[in-house]
Length: 295
Image (spheres, rainbow, N blue to C red):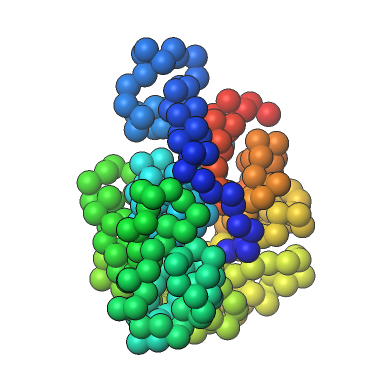
């Protein structure tokens, strides 16, 4: 959602993953650890016992692979996240793809607006720009490819992961149709402008909409117009009173903790004041912090 660009390098990713997997379970030595999946599950269990806080992986960012790619989505699925945030755009020939920027320049070997290119041309590009050679063959994924990956994961694992859909440039009908095809529409959340969400509501009346909320005074109008599932909150404007007011309306509160805010101190504060979902570039750090925190 945000335009902050995280620093992503393969060497950093390897170091990060090595550190977290070597010490995932509180109070246990590494020789007693089971699989990484079991260790993460234990962390999540400890975290859930303290806070009812969910975690969303920002652009699927695992620090191990390029953002908004199947490679990084595979990694965060292993981390058992509650949501994977994806940015949906439309190609020249009407295909839905996953890319944050309107331009191809930053994250791919292409140049210019993504909307000027057909899917066939986009599939010739590498989406691994800025990473090691391992990701040179990584491609910009379609929404259908991402849905297929997540649906298969959910069918074969006990705890599902849902999609957090940032509607960058996409018509509601094909978006809804694709998610519905893979059984992911019901529990997905949709972020976008109020107009985009209102159009989505006309196509899918029960879709879980998440407009932004800048101040409490906007809440009655947005609730009346959109009947939101959640509000996306600017963390710098969040306080406990606002969270309580939102919850009193039966609405959830999501917030991005990114850039300098992506820190243990802010995770603890967010959980303490009742944020329902933290969006982060450092999933395991959130787990570790909230599993250990008692304040």
